[in-house]
Length: 107
Image (cartoon, rainbow, N blue to C red; front, side, top):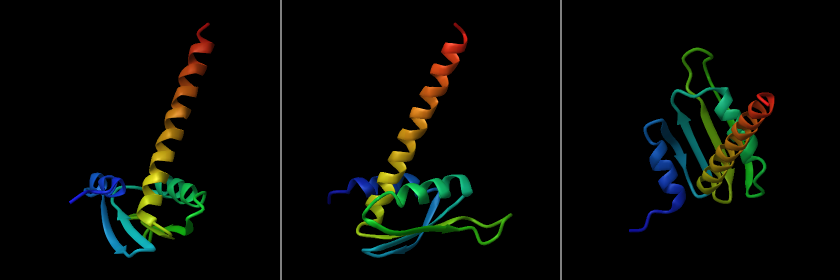
């Protein structure tokens, strides 16, 4: 049995997430220990994907609530994996900019 790339990503996150809904066009997860920072970043990045019809998240209680991320689209698992990879790439680029600006100020 071959495991798809997006399923490997989801397996790696398994300790931090609980799948609530998993259909061909809809995917909803609860992400333990995360906040608006990650969820809003993922939501915004997901909406850049032409295959995504909708992406949203909710934190039902401001203190004890766990965020739930909802995705509707052509292949929501694949879109989530792509969005996560895009966010990581952008963070790496931002980190490199910070490092290079620190190097410039030391000159």
